[in-house]
Image 1: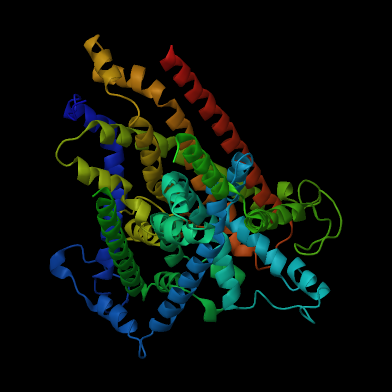
Image 2: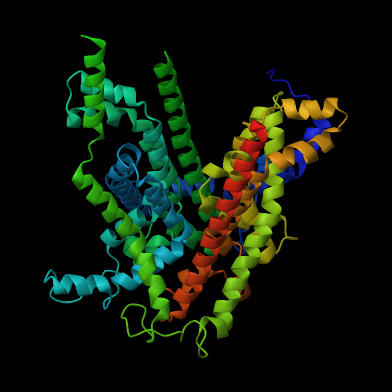
Length: 302
Length: 289
């Protein structure tokens, strides 16, 4: 089949025109507004944010504030950035530890129960994220089932305040919220994995554990990475999970800081610069990921 | 080695690889319980007879239909539900046609610039939702002030992040539809638009069903964009209501409200799944004939 299009261009523009206009108007212009505010100089008297639409008016003062705020010694954003990074790394590690065995089992071992298991793995997607967090707010409250179970088992002598600003609760809530999103792409990758490699490994005398460590695990790295990208991107913009299960300033994340700065008119430009910096940072990470996986794919083909 | 013993050995290896580790089985079922039980408990608490969302005090419909504090008789809960569903329906009505139009072009146009357009159409998938929400908030407050914060801004925001999902789903389906059918239709005298309407759209039915379900579910579940572009209490959706009141003194009527959302989404997904299955089956059979 030739890869030429037999439709005239005006026709193609008719079907895609509204969609393209939508993207130009709201995505392109939207992101441009974000940068225009970040690069603008606030009104000297009213301190309201003033967008710099023309590149001639760009001022990098807000970005300088953000960069100096991210300075590890004394920058105002450093602590919250470091904390977000630690929470996200821990939550991602938790997702791998919990999600990998689940995806591995369903892809490799499940037989008659496979269809049922897949439905059960998709079910959390039907329950709204907020309801799943609401559920934990009830379970973890001082008179909730978690405290009751722990005191029945004599693990705690009095009810614990799980929702009173504990970093561990926030990390667990992040894991709980995002692990279903990690499992599905990993499952898809493991399902596609060529079983002949595993058979070859067993044929050459490797036991089950060695086959897993030296064959299955390395072959599933692309799936793990895809899952990690999928959950890390939203976690960097998350400000609601920690707010629901902790609410304390000591567990706030970078999303909360951006939120606070955007909410205040005087500091909105700095909030916009923070959001732009986050966007640039994540796109850079993603570009690196796409490049390395493309290179790895070429290496395999060779 | 003889052929027979080699086959026997391969069989033994396959059996050895397939033997299920018991610990893993237990772990997986433990995960399933952990991932679903909390939501089921939260749903059960909507039938609590007391005010608590954490101690069980007996079964009642007090927070569903009976009494003034119930979901049915309270304007805040009902309003949030109505607004959630309104946004979801509008999102489906706008995002699905726009996304399908985009996907048709992207899978039938290989000329110069098609790569850039394709990137543009799916770019929002990798923009964190918070950044998209802030961008649109700033756009509507600084430049496009004809768009007021509230329902209109919320619909625009939801359609913007739903579009790439519809595009990806539809392109997946398009890639399995050969251009031969459309070419044949045009050879037989169809105009390009007639080929689209008479050949492509019927073949795309499963993708349309899947897109409708995804667009609805994305809208119902959305929090960040919807909150950023809201105006006042009348534009509060259920996820916003949960966020605003979960840590306060909200009654189990909150759980009842969230349950309605889950049940409607689940029913729609189940219906969409059946329809999708029936449509693709019919097409497979049609193609086989």
